[in-house]
Each structure stands twice: as C-alpha cells, then as structure tokens.
Image (cartoon, rainbow, N blue to C red; front, side, top):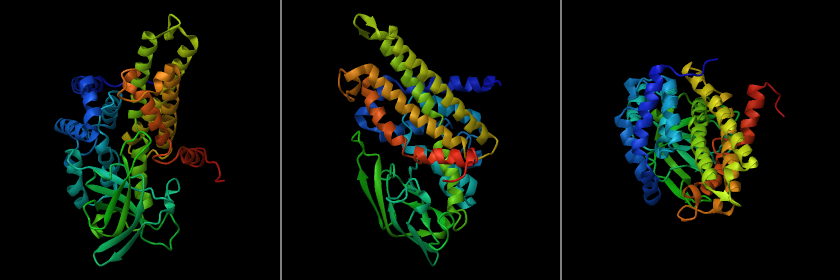
Length: 390
C-alpha cells in the first residue's frame, strides 16, 4: 500500500506550511493568549478565506475551492500541526456546512454557505441537553407547528461558542409519539431570535467556551428545517461524522510530542539529559507510534469521504483513539516534567508555555464531547463488529 501523496498535493502542503510558518509565529501565539482566541480567529480565518482555503473541498458554486478531500486533509493536517486558531469557525466548516450541502435546500445553500466560506458567520451546535447527551435521541426540546413557523421550546447545554454565534443548528422533537430516533427534526436557528437566552458555563481551565441555551417559544420559519420533518436523526449523521473525523488532533499531538522531545533533550536531572533516561525514551516512542496509528485512522476517514461515503465506523474510531491519545500524551508530558508540568500559562517557570497542564485538562472534556468514548465503543461494537446490543 502506497501512502505517498501526489506531487501536486505535496506542493500544496509546502504552500500551506510556508503560509502558516509566516502567520502562526511565537509572537502570534503569545498575542492569542493575551487577547483571546475569538479576535485572532476572526482575523486569521479571513486570511484563509481570501486564499480560498477555508472550505477547500466544497463545490465552487457555494464558495468552496472545489478541491479534493485529500487536499482538504492536507490543509487540516497542517492547521492542526501549527495549532492555528480557527475554533470559532470549525462548526460552520466541518459540521453544518457539509450537512447543508448534503441535505439542505437550494435556498438554504445560497443563504448560508457563502457566509461560512467567507469566515463571516459563526455557528454553534444545539444537540446536547441536560438529560440527553450520550443518549442524544432522548432529547426533549420540542418544535410545534404554528402556521408557517415552528415554535421551539427547550434547553441545550455544553453549547460551544453560543455566546459568539450568529446561527445555531439544532435538533428538536417534532413528533413526541414516534420512536425516539424517528420523531426528531433538524433546524437552523438565528441566535438573534426573541426567546433565546444564553448563560455561560466556565470550564476547568477558567475559559468561557461552553454555554447553556434556553429556548422559549422561539419562532423558526419552516424553510429553516434541514431535510424532511422527523428525519433529523438521519440528517444529523452527516454532522456527527464531520465532528468526529478530525485529522487535526493527531497532527496537533505530533507538534506537542516534538516539544516534549526538545524539552527532554535540553533538561537535565542528576547531571544527565532526560533524553538519556530509557523509561522516558520508551514512553515518548510509544506516543510516536500511537500518533501515527491515529493519523492512519483519520486518513481512512478522509478516503471514505473522498469516495462519497459516510464514515459511520471510521469517524467514531478516530475520535475515540484520538481523544484518549491526547490524554495519554499530556499525562506523560506532565509526568516527565514533574511539578513544573502542572504550572499554568503565564508562569515563567512553566515549560512549553504552560501548555501541558492546560491541554491535559481540556483532554478530559474531549473524551465526553462529540459523544462519550463509551458510546463510541458501542458504535464500533454494534456497527463495526456486528455484535448484539446488550
């Protein structure tokens, strides 16, 4: 099996890499920490949009670049490696955009896609609820028909970027009598609509990424439904596959591992560089192997998308392996650094700008987000291996 990219694809990789080396400098990252991600994300995303790189594999008629999925993969891989700040716009590019392309009306495509590819519109995702996270199909948010609209009432939770978002793509129950997977519909909701209240949820690194969203008879036009009524669960599978199939995670882990390798080369314990310690060397070598495994799983996801397939098994496998890889990598990093590894961003004594402790705390949430890893294992067992439900 030949894993090499074509010559033109490698030339494109070098072009992206040169751009990112120029833009994502150490000064840039320090400024990001001082000013917050959103401002930098907007500025940086605009530059990507001007180069036509935000939604490379989307059709050109919707503002995309008409590129192959392999070129999109290369771009995402380099963005992940350089740990570039595009978080505020990932929802639009990776989740709702592909969903609208696959299931949206022509009017929905014309209205929403170009705002995403231009980096002008921020989206959030209204899926999880207080009693419907891993068991998403148990959601109770209701959408009731009234004339040409639906009135949506309910609560969403862990809604990333809801306080910054212009639009929300959400699931709501339109037939409470139907089996739970069959009575759900998929809506596009303007976050400026009357009846929406957003409350912050501060995470363990003291960052405001998550929110609770309360909807009280929010009026949503019927033309904002994506796909057919009561078919939202089917439509959402495109969204979930895009959410779980990220190549950026193993490439970001690779960058983190390289930082750790430099650290153990430069840091001495008992007069010897840590790099001479066989236990340290073995642990870092194991991480290098696991990162490569995760990369191959993500490549399979991209290959399936290139073939027009929905990676119902490969994408959960990528998410499961990648999220636990990040936990292991950052845990080993903190172990190697000792007490210094627990220092936070801003401490002059913190190795690697204090990233290790912060990333480790974030990694705990990634094992829950996008469907818990227990659910990912169930999907792999049932859909991938054909095992019976418990």
